[in-house]
Amino acid sequence: MRVRLAVLVCAVSLGSLAADPIPAFSVSGGSTDSTLSQYTIGDRFSTTQAITVTDLGVYSISGLAQAYQVGLWNSSGELLASATIPSTVEAGQFIYVPVTPVSLLAGQNFQIGELINSTATWLAFAAVTSAPQVTFDGGVFDSAINSTLTNPTKGTVAGAAEFGPSFEFTAVPEPSRMTWTKLDRKSTRLNSSHLG
Image 1: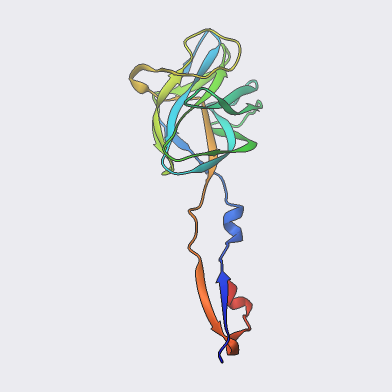
Image 2 (image 1 turned 180 degrees about the horizontal axis):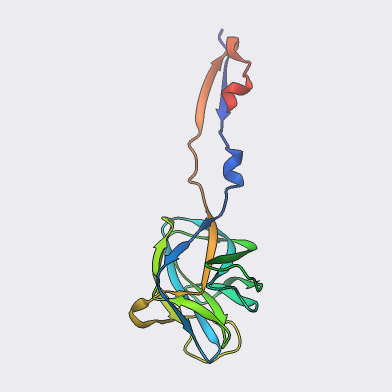
């Protein structure tokens, strides 16, 4: 009588568990914009696959003279994450801080916003390149003068980008396929080379 042993082999890459965050957007060109008021500016985006937001940030044109508040909302207006980005002398790049990870499902719409004031400058009418997992859907702002961070839902002129805010994320891996391997009695020993 032959004895058969079924072994479930699942390959898990530890490297994928600690993946580097992916910037949602990169920007080029554009013009510096400013205001005399205080309100929230931002951008609307959608997800093409499930992602986990790990960091929120703002674009620093020539350094950030003060701290800025950033928020992430779903299409129902629920605040999913927020952070305060500290002042810095770093320029010409997004400045990010970590947040409690937030899972975003594929095929959904979101807004990201930054509370600006009279000392803020941001990049308007920039060319935007999105990571493959997200789609830039246009610039937005909150038309009410408001001293608190609010969900920016009003579209900008021609949907122009307002950077401002952005985020980093990790891609949610698709479920890997499980492989069943049948071993007979003579092959009951597995080496580590079989597992990975």
